[in-house]
Image 1 (spheres, rainbow, N blue to C red):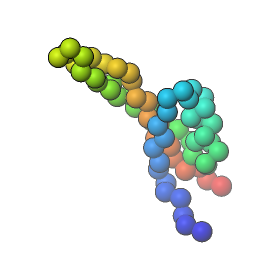
Image 2 (image 1 turned 45 degrees about the vertical axis):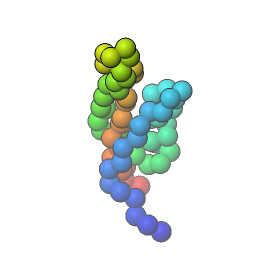
Image 3 (image 1 turned 135 degrees about the vertical axis):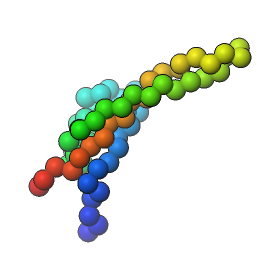
Length: 64
């Protein structure tokens, strides 16, 4: 069986709550260590505007 990476990034997908993403991390055996937010821009009428914030959690493998 291949060994799991020690760190893995989990992106909060559309329609998924933060708790759903954290539960998915725990189910895979990871604990959150960092939360990153990045703005996603779209161009409307020649101007750039923030469309939404992309949230990414970095997880560290828990000892089993």
